[in-house]
Length: 226
Image 1 (cartoon, rainbow, N blue to C red):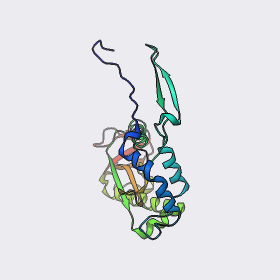
Image 2 (image 1 turned 45 degrees about the vertical axis):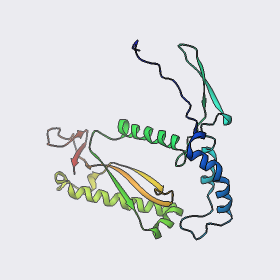
Image 3 (image 1 turned 180 degrees about the vertical axis):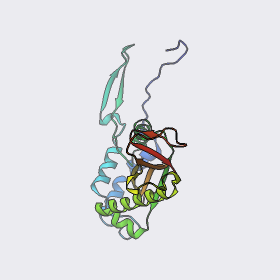
Image 4 (image 1 turned 135 degrees about the horizontal axis):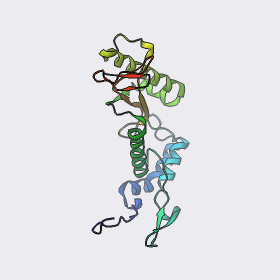
C-alpha cells in the first residue's frame, strides 16, 4: 500500500434513514391488509400479494438493520473490530442487494461466460392478455421464451453472410436470458431481456481457420459475425 493512500473504511449504509425504507415501513402493513381484503381487486394489476412478495418485503425491512443480526469482523493488521449488519440477499425490492447481485452477475458473464465478441441485447414485451398466462403458467412462459430465442437464431443466421452456405443444423447462437416480472412502476409485466453474442457459431469437422476475416476460431467451432 502506498504511504499516501488512505485505508478503506466500512461505513454502514443505514437503510432506515432512506425515504424508500421509511415509506415501506410505514405503509407496508396497511397495504398488505387492504390488498389481502380485496380492496384493490379490479384495479389494474393489483391483487392479493403472493407469499414470495410478502417474504421479499419482510426481508427488506430487516436488511442492514443491526437489531436483526450482525457479524463481528476484525482487521488482521490493526486489530480494529467493527460490526456488519446482515443483508437480505433478495431480488426486486432491496436496492442494495439487487444492485450487488446485478454487478456480480454482469462481472461473471463478462469474465467467465461470454467470449471476447460483440454482444447485443434483445428485449421482448408481449400484449397484456398474454402476460397473464405467462405470469401464472411456467410452461407457457418457457414456450414463449423458446419461440423468442428461435426467432433470434433465425434472424442472426439470415444476416450472417459467412454462414450463408452452412448447414443450418450446425449453426448455434450464444445467449443468456433474464426474465423480468415487473415494469417501471412495479406493475406486473413479465418480459424478457436476452444478451446474445452478435453472430452464429458453426460446428466444423476440423479446427476452424484463424485466418478468415472477422472470424474467431476454436477447436471445431467457427464464429460468423452478423
